[in-house]
Image (cartoon, helix red, strand yellow):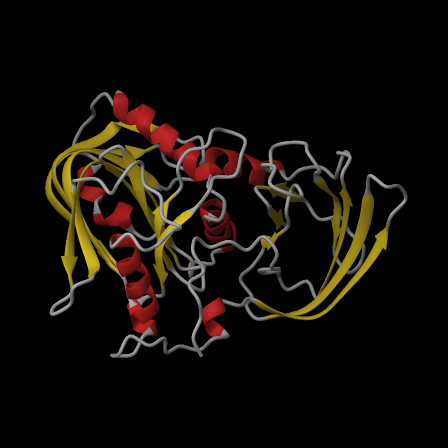
Length: 370
């Protein structure tokens, strides 16, 4: 069975995962903003801190000829300086490089390769980069072919976010010494904020899952490269059915969803056969954590400007580790950003099967319940 590329992981309408509660009851109101249950202060603090991190000027290193490899990606930090981010819950999850480097990318699988070929040959109408493809990009055709499925490019900056062990790989550089972050600090904060507004990349959710539940199967790696006038993103998320996404999300200003431009998207190499055909278990590839057996909803429409929903979800858990429950729930109908008040969805209460209130946060179109 073949699957179409999914692009940047986006689960706004799919109930993703719930813990071993057996029955979860959810109450929500749509439209006028109403006061909901008390926010889980600890989860809210970690969520907010994830996107407000700054570089740690005491943890930086002059680097030369450092190589970083991921699925379909090779990064070479030729020369420059690398700063690490301030720890979050005791872990380093970010870094920023300024200097000279080269990145090489290629896709896995027939669909991923064909989409990248279309992008690099100008046939993918959904692609955007400021102006034409930068002159820094060198396109390389596959052996014996005329179309391109691999490219290399020089870059001058890289913004990193990760939980996949890059901090351990580069741990020896953290004690090299301090240096004023200067422009790197400003660039890191801006890219971190842009990642915050790019809909779909659920890094903070996967980080919270790992830190609060011990569920370590969903590490991620994000690298954004400053190439010419713009930025190109490589994102690997093990929580996604289609783990790798390459593309751009040009800035449209704070408070709006970013428009996503997909260059290509594909699974890990291990999920394809030698001919490039997808060859994996379709069910397991979606990373299921529970089996939902029943969803019951009661909808009340008292006026023409609002309605309320009570939902009961019955399920069989497929894992035992979860103590924080994430599932997708939009914050606003339409295209308004989740921080805005237009047409809001207000989650009023989450209860277990016995009717006990459960602490939660509802941010960035995601609900996290404890």
